[in-house]
Amino acid sequence: MNELKTEGIPFYIVDVFAEGKYSGNQLAVVISRNKLNDEEMQRIAKEMNYSETSFITSVENYDVRIFTPEVELPFAGHPTIGTAYILQQEFMKEKAKTMSLNLKIGNIAILFKYKGEILSETWMEHKEPTFSGFFVPDLIADVLCIDENDIDDRFKIQEVSTGIPTIIVPLKSLDIIKKVSVNNEKYIQLIKNTQAKSILVFCPETYDKRNDLNVRFFADYYGVPEDPATGSANGCLAAYLVKHDYFGKKNIEIRVEQGYEIGRKSLLLLKAEEKAGKFYITVGGKVILVAKGTLL
Image 1 (spheres, rainbow, N blue to C red):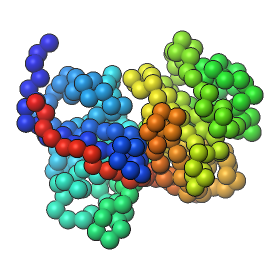
Image 2 (cartoon, rainbow, N blue to C red; image 1 turned 180 degrees about the vertical axis):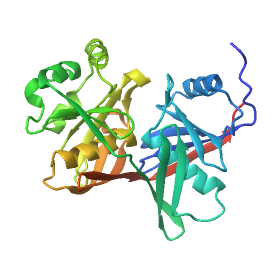
Image 3 (tube, rainbow, N blue to C red; image 1 turned 180 degrees about the horizontal axis):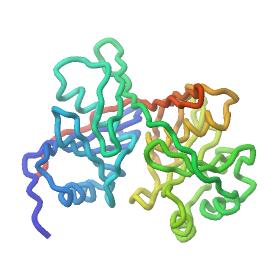
């Protein structure tokens, strides 16, 4: 392999959807400024070995590309929010309330909220959701190593996408959430026939009583056996909750906890509304700068 020519390229490490340092989902943001080719970015993402690594190819135009350790993604939640935070805090000359990131999927609107002069929350708008096929409970139960009766049969299991398709699975309790374990052989068989390569499970019982839902997310296809916080899949979840009247209404504003089972407590803030058949979805949370430096 050719040697990577990365010396002097700046990078930042942030915790996204974090209530404190070393919680949430870690992200490396590399200021590549079009100095790296596709192979080099993919190799750096594999070396970083976070669920995703983002590359700012143009600071001036807010052009961003996102790689997992295995593949490039057109869109992903916590890299979008974490990258917007770095652009605002490290490169913009004035406090902004909005920004538009240019991703492979297209432009994603970003909203910044402040407490005084301090940036407190970063939010992103999601694309209009699409709702695809339904899944029978026994098939998904086998993949998740749970019993068919553990699935909340008041609601369907469905594939939803606001950029990255995800299979949304409603479960009955936190005890069931805790025992979920993906059977890799059956998972591979499942995703051969689906657009969605990831699975999100959720339940209304939580570790922290201030929160509304507990979530776990699995995407081994992308090199992410379990993710501590995922903005893209939670955008799909927000659309699902409104579509299926999970809370009995067509607009929600909720707190979602994720990552508790793998020791990376995360908090995601979801807002969603359906009006005249159109969905309006935003996902937000806190970002914390952990480290910065230059590649060698």
